Length: 297
Ligand SMILES: [Zn+2]
Ligand SMILES: [Zn+2]
Ligand SMILES: [Zn+2]
Image (tube, rainbow, N blue to C red; front, side):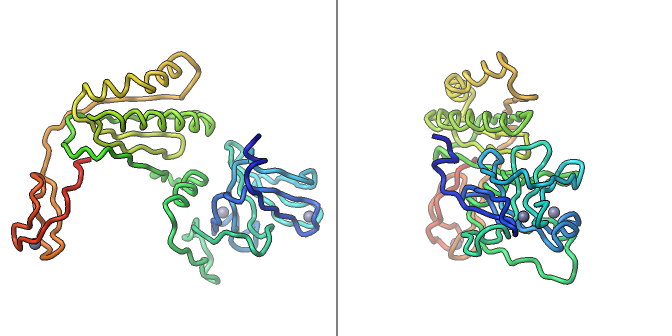
């Protein structure tokens, strides 16, 4: 059974009812975009839910006219009633659907404002409450924010509890050619991380994606521990990478430390910044017990 059939769906309609869309209730958002394009096309900001196009079921989509609103995007409206339906990138797997099409009891709140710097002065942006880590990741994946010099994405840290300082650090990046390939890379990394956590010489990994570029920063006690962990699922992924048409580019490296500095931790009683590298348990200034030493990585 496909995901579309097992996921709880919500239904939106245009004003005249000819166009109906069914989206997974778990779609990301609501995101409010205040950019100039959305101002012109919606009369004010565009409140959207973001879903994978493959997960959306359409009825009456023959009534939708698509207008090329920018070199990268097109926007659809109902040719009978004019309701704004959705925005979709020409290259990409996502679709942004107008939140106004759905029932007033839609179980979503505005979670993010985009392009606030382009907002007109005659309204205030919707207030955004605290956001859960799960929503943050879902939004980062659904609508990565880019500027000429920066690209946001998401990262996750997986830890072993190993308190020892790293003997080697592996830095890598890998570039997917499209969103499908990115999902394939993510599936591999989930398995790799399971192998890593099972290796006693593993310390921790920070891994994530900005756009189509994935990265890892992995700390190991020594190169032998890294070698043991990489001989498991990682070796399978490498065979796919070199044996098939899989990934656009990739770089890996292994680093050894030039210098490892102390770990400084604030005393909760007197506020002194204490050197906790050697795992002592009492504050040198006030003798209060110190919190446990954080891991080096
Ligand atoms: Zn309509
Ligand atoms: Zn916009
Ligand atoms: Zn103290």
